[in-house]
Length: 171
Image 1 (tube, rainbow, N blue to C red):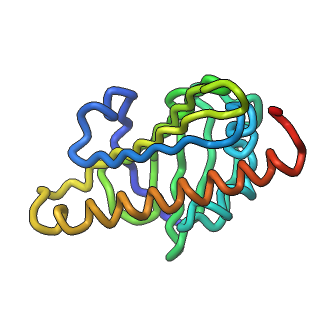
Image 2 (cartoon, one colour):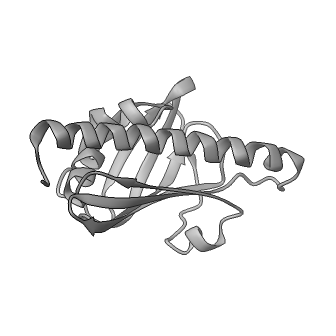
């Protein structure tokens, strides 16, 4: 399968990307439980709707520079590299290559704040540069993206909270 290069953006892309979507949610789970779900390749398929398969390609433990390949609907395959990995607080990655040219640059950032008492807040930021000027289409797509991301973060919360409840962890 052909892979097309994406711009190799850094963490500053989350401040400068032409398109940013950010959602957040409080979870009845600990940061450790959240990160256990992040590391579970099978879990991504259950909450991140477009994902059909995740392959860790650089092994564990994860660190800055770690890689994975993500397969999505429509045969889209993205090769990702981690820009930040701080167990329990932050995980960010970018697309290095993608099988279809839909974006010039793409990155995601997950920041987790421990609220104590077995609760935490997850802030998910998606940043992208499609290479096209924002116009009327963006004004229509942006609210739909926000709702979609909020829906997926809700699915993630239910997954993590159900795992937490079944193990009694963090209580």
